[in-house]
Each structure stands twice: as C-alpha cells, then as structure tokens.
Length: 240
Image (cartoon, rainbow, N blue to C red):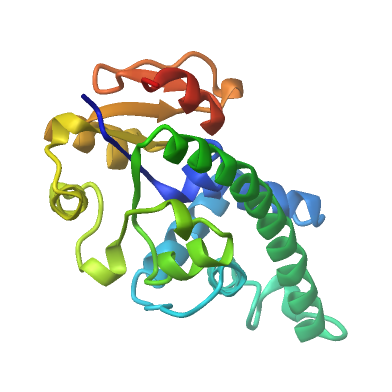
C-alpha cells in the first residue's frame, strides 16, 4: 500500500505545472518589457546556472526571486553598459523598478499557489500520508516551506544544494526514501518535469503523477502513471 507522497517544489507546489521560465516571461510582459522567447530562454538558463553556485540558506522566497531576476537582467545585458536599461536618465532606478515589478508579480503568483496547496497537504496528512519534498533548490527550501506554513505537514525535505546532488540523479530520490524508511513501491512522486521528476522517479520504482497545465494540451508518457492539470487534482488520484 502506498504510504507516502513526495513532491517537487518549483513548478509543482508553487506553480501548478507552469514552468518558472514561463512565469518570469509573463512578468516581463506585464511590466512592459517583453523578451523574444529564445533570447529569454538563454537568459533564464544562464541565470539558473549562476544561481547553482549560490547557497541561500536562511533566505526567503523574495530574496531568491530578486537574485534570479537580477541574474536574468544581467544575462539580457540590462544591468551594465551598453545595457538597454542603462541608458538615459536614472538607469539604476529604472533597472531597480523593473526588477521589483517582476519580483512582485512572481512572488504573488507563487504565494497564491502555495497558500492554496497548503490545504492539499493538510488533506493528504489527514488521510495519514507521510509527505515530503525533493527539489533542486538553493539551500533555502526549508526556509521557504517555513515561510509559507508547510513544515507542519512535511516529514522530509531534500534540497539539492544541501545534499550536494540534484535531480535527475536517482540518489536524491533515494535519500528521501531512506529518511522515510520506505521502499519506492510505497511512494508516489508528483512533479512537473518529465526529465527531472517523472522519468527518474519511475525508474526507481515510485508511482508518478505528472502535472501538466491544461493549456499545454493532452500529455502522456509511459513513465507517468497519472497526468493531472492542477495540484489539487492529486486528491482525486491517490487512494484514500
């Protein structure tokens, strides 16, 4: 019998399957600074690679987002000469204002998802499931979970920066299983990334729930036991 459910964090608990690159891109459009898709993706990837070298233990979600946005803007050439936002009057103020607008948009979107999904975790806990998170994060996963009141429902948190190993490496999933004292067959894994979440969890023997936004159309893969469109849908697919 399945006794535990493990979740990804970014794009799953905080975004209902929406990739964070899409959320950031929406924020820039909302702020009046749309970026061509390929150019933004390159900046997003560059920022994520730079972020991988940072350990943000003790820091909040907003601090993490501020760093991500600064790194993206730097990769886009907007933070230094001859950057697009560094010409004209008050360049630092202009860059700061854009950064704040993008951060505010992304923070509020993530916070809304996390506040709602807290009730999902509460319901699963009421059904006697043990719960955990396995995420590629920046050392502050526990801090962010504490910030949004998730810790009361979690038995294990596995943060790639703290562990020194990242998904899709199977060792990071195994560490969560070891700390729960459960075999893979007793656990579900819920995530939005086919390559980093669903395929490696499936190979290890966990049952898998792939979260894919409805607007992306039908989705199916042999490694996904179930496909859902919103995180609350997990309540309808795992046994009571």
